[in-house]
Image (tube, rainbow, N blue to C red; front, side, top):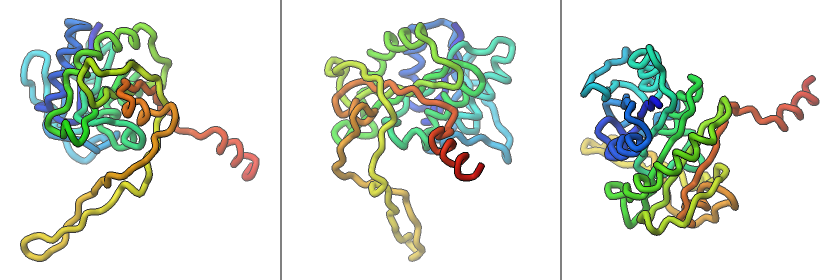
Length: 254
C-alpha cells in the first residue's frame, strides 16, 4: 500500500513526524509532501497566481511552497505520477479540527483534495487544551491509537466523495474512553471576534480572535466526543448540496 502524507502545520511540524511514524506501521511505501511553511487556516485553497516551488529533502520527503491542496496535487500528479497513492493521510494537526473548523482547516483540505482525486483520505488532528497548551499536545495519544483505528477504517473503506475526519482527545493515551462515530458539531458564532491593537506608530492592526466561553456540545457530535475523552471519527461528504432546501426551492421557483 502506497501512502501519501501531508499536513498544514508545515514540513517541520511535530505532528508530521508523528504521522510518518504512524504510517510506517501500516506500510513501507510512504511519501511525504508537505508545505514549506505553516498553512493553518488556508482551507481548501490552491495556488493559481504563484508558481509552486518543490524542494526534495530526502528520497521520500518533499516540501512545497504552497498549500496542503497544492501538496496533494503535486504528490499525485507529479512525484507519484507513475503509481498513485492508495491512501492519503493528512496531519497530525496540532489542535482539533471539529465543528466549523473543518471549513477553515488545511489539514482537512488535504484529505478533501485526496478524495477529489479518487483516493481514500483521512485527516487526523490532536486536540489540546488550556493545560497542555499549543506546544505540548498529547502526541502520544494519536501515535498510540491511530494505527489500529486506521487499519479498521482502511479495511472498511469509504465510498467515493467521502473522507474521514479523526480527532484525538486532549488526554494521555491510557485515558482515552473509546471511539465515537460522530456528526459535525456547531459552536456559537459569538465565540469569533476581532482583537484590535495599535502598533508603535499609532496605526491600527487586527487579529482574528477566538473567545472562550461555556457551551453545550450537541449530542452525537465531534465536540461531545472530545469532551468525553473519546476519539471522534466523522465522515464528511464533498457534496455540499442541501437536498431538502433544493426540493423546496424547486417547488417555489420551478
